[in-house]
Length: 384
Image (cartoon, rainbow, N blue to C red; front, side, top):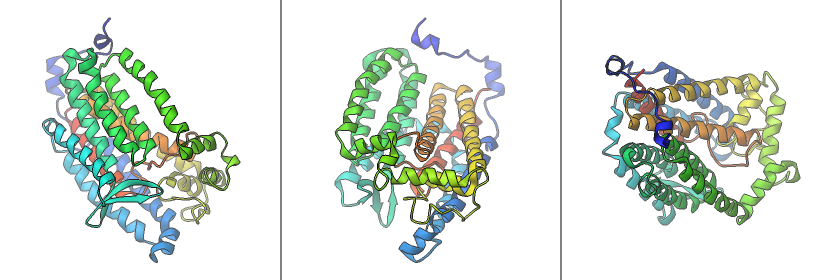
């Protein structure tokens, strides 16, 4: 049995397709969890950042106001995109791709690049900062879905079904690695591999490339002092309590002191200048301390609902382009959530990735809400 045949789902009858081609414009199975996550995120950004904001800016509501503004802009944009037919992105795919590449280059070569924590990942234009990598994820998802769906007749050919996608992925990876942002690069590769496998790219091509990429990734880790130390800290954070292990130790202390019921909203201790970046990378730890394992489980349930619904939309594909785009959106959000939670719980090496819909950060929040809006539109036209 060929690779394409093995992964092809049974075709629906034309009557079934016609009867179920459209659905509600607003998918409440997606909308409700997202709004709950955003609402919890706004509240927890305030709780986690009020002391930091008061010390740095003299205003405890500084981060709260900005996050609330991003959420207020993101919600109508998400609902608007639920009514925009997802097929309009097909003719725009190369515009998205070129724009993402230009933005990633601009971070590195222009004076607009903003550096924080030793990495230049932000582009600042007229007082507004944003991370091009977030837009690059959207561009990569649309490109992969478009290209793989268009090349199905020759998908098993190496130079048609595999190499063009890897070349684009490598270009993105080099630009992201120069920032440097190893964590985002890893997310891009995992996302692309999942979408390519679902797009019926032969497994032998993916496996062979993985065997080549893995040693390169290992070399990038051991050749960089700070990456190597992060990996060693992951194995034993208590060995480096005052430098690389500091974040993880205080993150674990937050979960441990929160217990089952938590200390209560605003009553966390680790956010008081003990846990670095409490409102961004480590907001999950603040939630674990103040809300306890009950709120941790609630958040997991909300993310699982998004994951389940996204996969259902991808399976009930109106066409292969829509199916792959729905899968890419779902995997992108799920991967970032898994990595962030894994880092906070010391299950993965430390990476500077935000928690979708919860962490402070306008670019991440807006792009994720854009992705959900597109996913809603794909679900509206799904075949059941």
